[in-house]
Every structure is written in structure tokens, then in C-alpha cells.
Image (tube, rainbow, N blue to C red; front, top):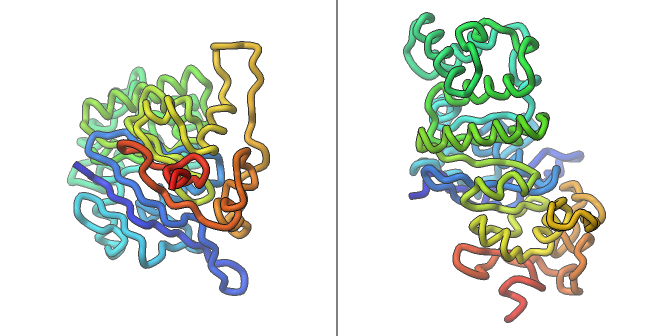
Length: 326
């Protein structure tokens, strides 16, 4: 059963001369209860902005356009007043941000920050909130939680700070967790520990997860489905096994080609040439065509639709998608 249904999401920034610049352009997807969906792509594709838009946390210069719908458990969050939205944000939908150093208050003890989240979304005395904070620290795998609850963020390692962020996100027992690049600043060993922790918590709580990442390798054995995003749009969507077995969009293939493997140590990586264009310089037609190795003239003129190419597998490409055979 679908818990979150994002439909035709558009996010625009106010540009110079009152010219709006669209940064998320018609994104649609769903997340089922208990499902882990990965949203992948290079930096600058609009992944984090999509997560922020779901929670109504866009910067003051950005806004969702009128056609956008973010339906959570039957309620369109884009229609809610700020006070009503606060009953969802943090309580039923929570978010782990990229950088715990920037997200945690450096002058507050971590236990106080967890307790603050607990008391904001439920009735609890200070003593009850502190006891719950210690229990949450234990649940996210921090050793000696009764002592660590009184530590300041700078007294913890990067991995421990990220675990504190997860504890804050879990404080109100949300049904959906948006994890925005939760392992970016961590070494490989700690990355694996954090991802394993999220797997365990999802299984034990029946919680859905939207994992935002630029790294396809970390979702291979964890995600149920993968959404590939490029320049503000979803360009491919499939079950994880299908995507890894038979990627159809040239951008997805490019992401795989730039991943190191253990199969052949002598093989050279094949990086995607160029960079993701900024929203005010998106090309016409398929936005990937300036970097695409298989593009044709039509790619420069016409926008390819996202179409079915297999069971629960869609792609937006004139050359390799279903439209190529029409």
C-alpha cells in the first residue's frame, strides 16, 4: 500500500528580474509502507530539494508550484497550513540531513536535543524525555548511552554524531524516514555500519525509507526500488535487481560505468563527460543529450516521456526506451 505519493512535483526558485527558475521539474513517484526507495543521481540533480519539498522545508526563495501534489497517507501536504504541517513534520515524516556537524546544535548536549524532539511531538516530562533519549541512543548503537547523553556534539566521532541525528529523527516514531546522503562524510567502515543500522531500524519498526544518495553502490543490496534523477527529472525507475541487471537509460549506464569493481582490477573507469547543467541552463529536448554517447537529432529537439519498458520499469529515452520501437 502506498504511503507517500509524489505527483508532478515542481520546485521553482525566484530568479533575477522576477524570472522563476525551475529546479525540480515534474517529478512523480511513490513509496510503499515499509519500503526502501533510493533516489540517486549526481550532485545538482535535485534529489535533496525533492526531499525538502516533501517536508515543506524549502528555502524562502523557493516554492512548490500549484500542480504539485505530495500525498501522505491520503492527505495532500501541499495544501496544509504551517500549523497543520508541523503535525506531520518530525512526527510522521522525519529527515536525516547530510551533515550532522551543521545540523546539531554545538552548544546543547545531545541528550537535550533528542529530548527536545521527543517533547515537541508528545507529552513527556523532562525525566521521561531523558530516559527515552538514553533508550534511543542505545537503539542506534551508541555504547554507554547513559554517559553519552550528556556529551556535546564535538565530543563525539562523525559516526556517533550521525547516530544521534538518527535518534532525533526516530524520536516520534515516524512512518517515513527521508535519509539525505546519510553517509557522505563518513569513512567506508562507518558508512556500512550506518546503512546496516537503517536496515535494522526499518525492519524492526516497519518504517518506510526514502534514501537520497549519489552512490549506486550503497543501494545495491538495500533498496527495493531505485529512482534515477537527472537535471530535475526522473529518467529511469525500476526494481533494484532489474535496474542493476539491465539499466536502460544512458545516464544510468554511465553511473554504473563510473563505479569501480573487483571483477577486473585492470579495467579503466568510464566517467560521464561534462557536468550536470544548472537549472537556468538546461538544454532543450533530453537534458542529458550533451553528455550522452548514443544521442540522436531527436534527443536535441524533443523531451522523451517516461514510459513503461517492463514490469515496474520505466525510462525516458528516445534511443533505448520503449519509444525507440514506435
